[in-house]
Image 1 (tube, rainbow, N blue to C red):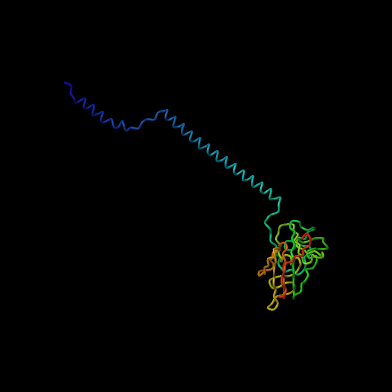
Image 2: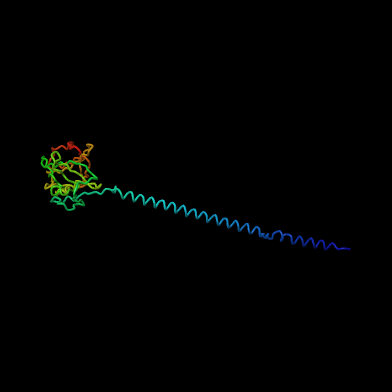
Length: 249
């Protein structure tokens, strides 16, 4: 008679080995390995392609910016700088400019053509107007002219011409340096202010706006059709805008 022990032992053996077989990792087939490697190669190729595009775009943008900069600098070199320098003068000269460079202003063989504006200067001392000398800023009968000068034509007295070769901003102090006369808050020409002799500076712009200058008169900027009053001990003089400009002024 066959014993039941063998089937029972066989079943027990299968029962004991079944869990380990189920838990064992499945071997990857060769086809799956090839597929996985192909996918990795595709990912690497895609990353490389993205990097190439980034480099190309960077070179394009950088090259475009460089080209734009070169074009901009080339164009700007054809025109004067838009940044105007400010020439204020020192207010300490006592002799007229003689043709040498003064305050950075050269005496030119012809009038500058970049700027051409006019201002009227009214200097009063003890209620009487003093005349700005004709040909101030014009040397040797016109051999050379400073950017700031006064002509000798009738009707052009006391009119400062700013005929500059550049876009510099000139001030009253620069003109007084060309004239060769001192000027400060308390001094003009040979006159010094004190408790009984007031020195007042007044500007009237081209639109008629009047300003009493309280700062340093050296810094009064010269603007088109400006009227500048310097009043030493002249309390009865009422500043008015100058209007008798010559044709072309």
